[in-house]
Image (cartoon, rainbow, N blue to C red; front, side):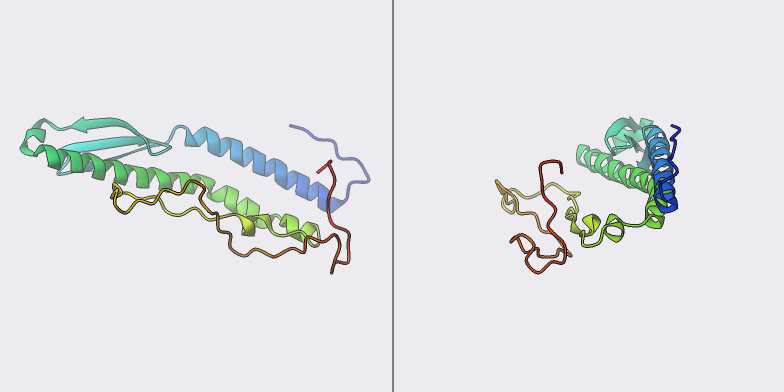
Length: 175
């Protein structure tokens, strides 16, 4: 992708645009590499091996010839354990792939730094709770029909147009 930058484009804007292009190239390359990721883990002295894809989904299970030395319960637990180990490994590999993206993003100015008064969008993003690695007990499970999202580091905004501000509120149908 080649872009022509007009003469009245500031150097700062040109640098930001170049940084964005570099970020898009890094994202595309990370996506191409990620789809190829797999990880395998073996447990119970190699009797059970699980392989997962980049999403941590089990794509292959291999039992050794001496699998019959384990009970059904031990085999089931071993499949779960091996799958979880492989999923953790592929998650680590994925994190390593996106590390250059995080570094590139850290070098770029935040939108809130470029537009005075704009809240930092990343700070407003909710943090997902960790997912369980064990089967939940139906007695303890609470299913909320409409879960409440909680946000951290959020600034309260006065909804009355312009009150207490030195600039007009951002509004309109073009946003």
